[in-house]
Length: 355
Length: 219
Image (cartoon, each protein chain N blue to C red):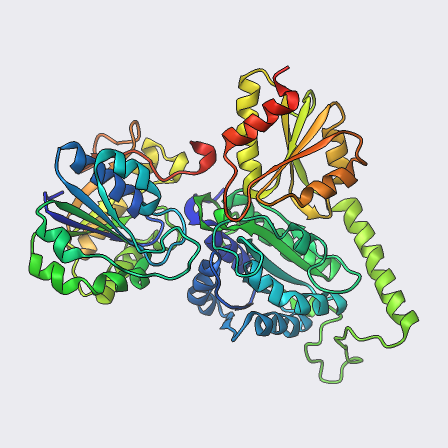
């Protein structure tokens, strides 16, 4: 393991992208993720890559669309309002079967909302962002080290399944500092030549490739979508990831993701000290949602508590995943207010965890 | 560290300026002196001196921060009456945010600070910060800050840390780095900061600190 450095979450995301062979970054600044762009503006030219501050989020995502079509690893980053602006482009990229990585460091909404951390864009991100029948991969790290690791995984999954992958963080993760280590000292360069679909110039050596999301014949569009859903089925079967702590004998399983999972874990640790049988379950992949892992984790539980920095969005997926086999309750703070471990503990107690 | 009425704290962002500034202010207040903290960070939206409003009020420390700090408004507005704070006779600590960009805000006060005279400008270094691990890089950021604000540093604060994972060995491994920054910049090491149990015996200018800037799940 390489020596550890102290990094801000946003810096770790940016450095990890460079190391994963991201050669082009197109973005537009917005708090609380601007350090990603600031970092890459300094580092990208030094490794022979492209950093471009676009005139808007809409322009940036369309630059990603074009760049992804050439097979080069590329990325954009934004925060909630900016992601809304990118939604059309994300739909087009998914519709053209192109890989790219999008980082979303969530802040409070709706509208301009606020600049403090939030998880109120769970629906937006996990349900596809833009229009159409499609999915995007969503990874939700909860430490600065995991933020770095998730970026590499996002690029790999995006390439493997030819679709956009999102690393979903929130302002707290983006701004906090923690030790992080990067395994490879060397920066990996992606190889566009290994992507037979890429429109990257061939000098008449093969049939030309077309990047397109327009299918005017209904049966053809349906066939394309069905083919895509076969890939989604494979992803749902093989790519789920979650972390379960003390769930085996837990009466109450607390489900949370991202930075909220750390607050929830802290509350669960306190509950255990008080003799309350609480467990912590953290989905790392939000799409695909870790359905089997969650069912295994709540096997012996009487109740489930979902904690989010929102009015309750992932709570729907939790109910669906376990088919409402147990009562699912919710605790959340929103608008940029962070739930305190003591508040979560109080909710655990209120649910009968002190019996 | 010299006993100056005005201490200006700068550094590469994430080096630990805020934590150092909070420690310094609490020490000044503990000596029974009047102390004012000025949060001049126009760059970072979270984890800043303005987070300590409650603790400062308890210890009788005055705090000045940009009007909209920690609010939802993304506008850096500086309403700091530095002249009157300095004329008041007490101590003042200025926490300057994020690199050369942040130091621009300090530049506005350069004439007042120069005329005041009884000041020191300390550059906080952290050997574990990703882009300033080499002494030459740390010195370059230091020069960029000086260029940006029009004031010169007078000393170095070795605040090398890995946050919650900091051990005595972490600090020990940073001593040579701090010496090299000192040699390259021609400035003295004014303090080696470490929390209880992490201070190496051989560290120069020991300055024991507490870690006040932490995450909710560590509290």
